[in-house]
Amino acid sequence: MKMDLVIRNGVIVDPVSLEEVRGDVGISGDRIACLGSDVPQGEREVDARGLLVLPGLVDTHMHFEHRIGDPYTVLRFLLLQGVTTAFAGHCGEGVTIREYKEWFRQNPLLNMGFMIGATTLRRAAGSEDRYSPSTDEQISIMEGLLRENLEEGAWGLSFGLEYAPGTSSDELTRLALVVSGFEKRLISIHIRSDGHRSPGAVAEAIDLARRTGVRVQVSHLGSMTAFGHSEEALRMIGQARAEGVDVTFDVYPYYAFAARIGSAVFDPGFEERLGKGLEALDISTGKYRGVALTPETFKKAREEDPDAYVIAHVMNPDEVDMCLLHPDSAIASDAVLRGDEGHPRAAGTFPRGIGILRKAGLSWPEAVRHATSRPSEMMWHDGGRIIEGANAELVVIDPDVYHDRGEFGKPLVPPRGVKWVILNGKIAVEDGNVTEPPSGKMLLR
Ligand SMILES: [Zn+2]
Image 1 (cartoon, helix red, strand yellow):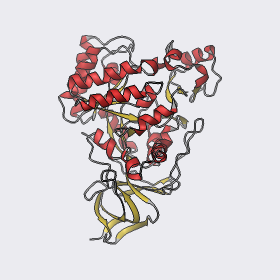
Image 2 (cartoon, helix red, strand yellow):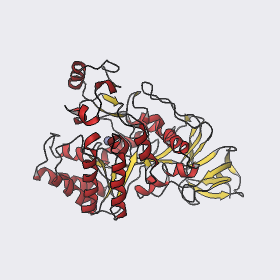
Image 3 (cartoon, protein in one colour):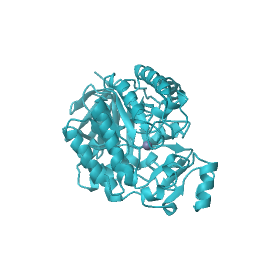
Image 4 (cartoon, helix red, strand yellow):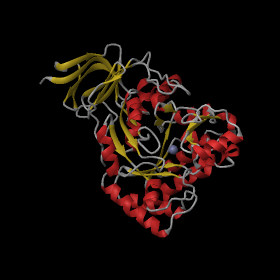
């Protein structure tokens, strides 16, 4: 049988068996049809001699939101890193599954699944004040809307508790119990506080998983705890997992976070919580971009351009790396952009994260596991491996030069070393360029 596409002579990396085997990959339609040394001729063949053939990367946590960013640019830059499947709708943000379907089909650059955000549910229920708990009646409306979205294929529910500090324990529990009525759905939580208050916030997330039996994914753990509390957070999560509590976490490999300046993250007192002040902050989008921050300009920017993104250089590098190096971690981008402005994680998370793991001594399969099979397992998603019969999602990289190039102030530079990205059997990136037309699918649970 003739193949549609064959990748010849590469080293195939398997993140589960941890093997690296020289061989060919034959693709027929959107499936991996055969592997090994006797793969038949292909309609198209590419020569991967000297290159690594990895499963397409899986991003469990990114943002695809018009309200706070520029979704199609985010998809493009994830694809250019080798991401083929991504999950949006985190940190409480996003839209309904019906609206996502509309947006997504306009430019389906990746395979995508969506969570439904609790803040989105709050808005729909008229619970607009982030500092107030939702009323009993509002929570009932949220429960109904959540159930509808889960029935329509949402992968789960997300909370952005730091952005909606009024969220009560009752609201948290009642929504989680709706999720618990559906199979293989999870809750992601941007926890209630970072910095010196993060241990209690991690405990709250673990407690929710323990009480309701729902899998809880702690979002971008390093950015919340790398203020002297990562070791403690990892110990708490490890202990809970050992007791059978279903808690997971993702990490982005940068030592600065990004958040909207008008969000509750920067409410008075943030300096004490983060252990650093205005000297560690840069406004990275909008009309205040690059402005020297004084208490006056900061206050003005908060009032006049509350959606501007601030980059906060506040985390301890060693601790972010510690979270990343934990065997249970998934690398995830948390990517969000406004035009060509924002945090470089949108363009560099995966090569950078894999690079840090490699430098720490992990083999290629061990490092790649954190960006493929591990995030797949966390979502109960059937992906992240190169095996016969699997959906054909692959990335072919030059291991000697695969690295990120985006920087703070100049975030949108694609990485080096990505030769091809194969999405659903079709070449989606060739030599650093996105090919047309896009062939991504919407993934419904
Ligand atoms: Zn978040």
